[in-house]
Length: 108
Image (tube, rainbow, N blue to C red; front, side, top):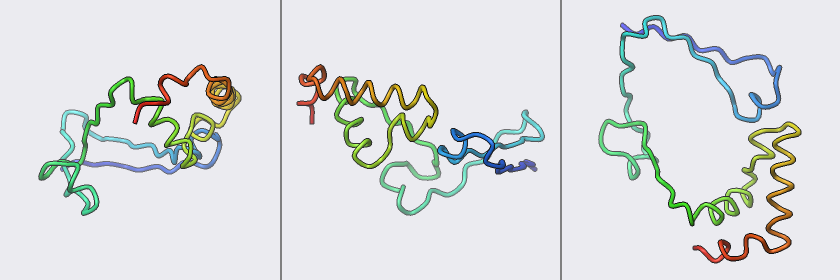
């Protein structure tokens, strides 16, 4: 029997809060975790009885996906709400604004 404890921490760190951080404790690391049923909305992305899927993104599609995620409010600024995350986001937006990402912006 796998014993698993779940801890939802106090909001002591903005990054953990922004990422919805949860800590887990696994009693016996020699006991493998068992797969759970795939949720209905994920059935198209996962084979039967698999609840973890790897999605490989082609490198040239990365700028396009980053723009799409940013439009949805998902960026380094929101995932890493510290000075470094904000700085990375501002630098990314600035590079886009001055046209340094124009060539990769054409990827769809």
